[in-house]
Image (tube, rainbow, N blue to C red):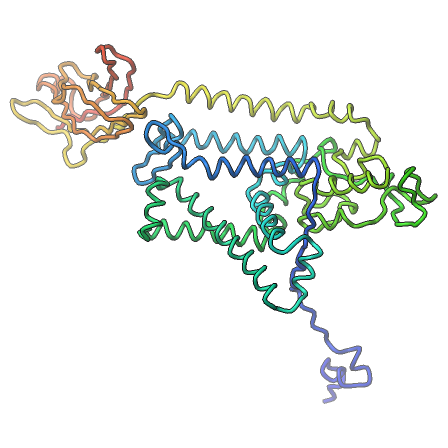
Length: 488
């Protein structure tokens, strides 16, 4: 059998070079991005947000409120303290409302002005900005970092790289320590760290959160935004032709090119060339390494670094600013004035998001203001169902959990209603300390004739827990439903 037509045979003939199978790797090492430092209006806003967010994050755990930590999520005691607010797991609805508000706010901001969150306040952006600042302090700006990485290892390179790594690790560990300080009182946590007495979970989360900060902000950087963050993928669904985005004015800037005849003093340029001198600085300052002149790309995080650097170049060339600017697709196509762009901000889609967001915020605020100062849970004692006790009385036993949701001592009176002649074995007032939760056993009894008339089975019952003021008047009442079982 002649198998000269087989692929293997074909690869050995005179045309073997053409017929040979070529293996191409689908994986390529990511090219490192050396972002150039930039200054300007938008860079100032980014650093203002860095300062604000980090002062809040690092500073809140050290604030005190009513002789305790101002913001503390005490998972062990199942209490969450937010300044004067004490929340319990039963208040999960407020967390749900907060998440819904965050989502609608994100939709609103994205519809109006694109990825503002990503460019200015996202933790990934904020910490990347901080880590890049540290890197610049040790290794210099873009050209110096590239030269240092290309140089052979020596004492100077080792010191610069080692100093940067030490600062990054210290910053990551401090971030992890602060994160855990929201769940363990930070003063207690600091004493544990100094005495090397951290518990296993505290150690794990400090190291884990610190390592995540170190890895994401120090090394992964734009990879998180491009490949890990889902927001970059579905942002286009929230954009419309009137969304403010960072754009390059191709009609004004093209054809691009540098030319010795460009006159910086009078702002004149050679005939046939646009305002873009093709310096490439907009690419060098981009933290994700894109060229904004190629149009809107999902990798763009809206940081506006390209606007700052391009405006600086335009100033030096004595050209008008705004070659790269915030604009809309409709504005670019119609060459609309800035006043027209801002009028289009108040379009139906934006008004709808704003109305829904306002309603949710109002509802959450009203719910917080009308929130009960205490909570009650009623659980039937499963070990003791309805039973007949002395003199034929029928008794049911319940367990009540009363939770003081304030930071003041409170006194409560427990009563019940639903069946005539109903008596409780607990009549004395109950006093709870600030933010205290306590389980109490309560036995409810009815006379034999009432039980006979009611008949066997379950009958509705209501527990009334009344908050008393120091003067002995009723300040608030919580009603919880239960059932009273009459045995056969």
